[in-house]
Length: 414
Length: 141
Image (cartoon, rainbow over all chains, first blue to last red; front, side):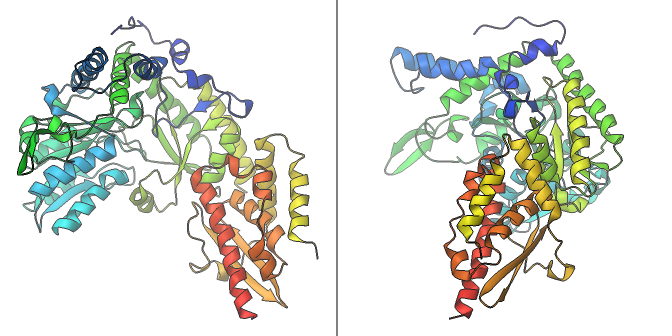
């Protein structure tokens, strides 16, 4: 695998050239892509990895004796180590490939959850979870006669940690909480939550979907029991992601789906399971996307991540201050520790109308509930307009966005 | 009384004046801003259309076999859409409304600029208008 030479300073103009989509011209206007929390754009190296696999060595992995299969298997297997290193897991056996964060949460609920949650137990989530980290737990609760409890949040969109004393009681058997909230941008003090849960011997799953692309994640330092994330929010392809689980837990968990690859031996009398992590990966894996996810991880090491992170903080602070100057704008989610996500509402203007106006100007934002209905209910709003940034966005784009937003307000907030 | 097809053709002609989606969007907003607001008493959950990202209320009345619709929304754009639909379908007979194909929606390029959720909302509005017409059809049998 070739490694791009590390760029010493962060040059946003140069980095934008790595992302072909950024030069698109919707309606003949330069694209301003501020919907990165929904999915990030892909650098050319990721696109090339997909095309290259299908063009030159498409074959099934771990089965064939032929040249192509060996090449595909080598490329596929190498990515597990890349993912391990990216989040600093102790061993690559702790990495399970899944379709994405949603499947990851479902996998843990269906295996660890089904085995360990009993009637009368409680599962603790937070008030700012994405639906993906609520619904699988609700389904498990329904099946087992268990109950879902919620860590409350304050008006800034910060979790109220004082409540943990009561919530982490004897009935609580599992905690599932987001690292960074997609709807508010809040970065939760996840390490502290994990330490508190562990002091009562309660395992913790972290929804890392938003966090992996913006903060360096070290699962051993966090000491989380499970960490789930998707490749597509961190410059990789859609349809692939990973579950990290502590090896001791994975060893004890029953399999997820049944099929090929996950078995050691099959007879009509019974079947024995393959080793971790293969036990959880039934069927032909998503080979192309795993390989492209590996290319995305390589790309992350090709530039100065600290400088890229600073670019996002600059974008967040600059846009927040510009929005604060517009009297009819109210920012939803004003936590002290925030990722580069700004959710806001405008007096007398419907979020979707504003989003559609911005779209006619080539600006992509998300409007609505952001798959977090409970968060919108908490704030008593039908939805927000959300601008979410990536390091390849520029302050000039923010200026254009603010200029067009003011026009939208003039037209719509009457 | 103009037929549904005649009104649809007039709308298609109006939209032919615009080259860009931006112009069409602004025109729909203008139409929406002109829509007479619905009285608060009609903004009930019963009159709310399910399947829309924004809130849409729709009600209908019938007089001598002719249906008249009234509607409102918290979205100006949706008000514009529903005003267009009302221009075509209000003051028509139940039979004409039930049989309307509403080809103008695709011809003015409305649907091609919509995310799935928005397109579903538009479909839900049309469905509700037709359901009212079916109701009045049976009432008059």
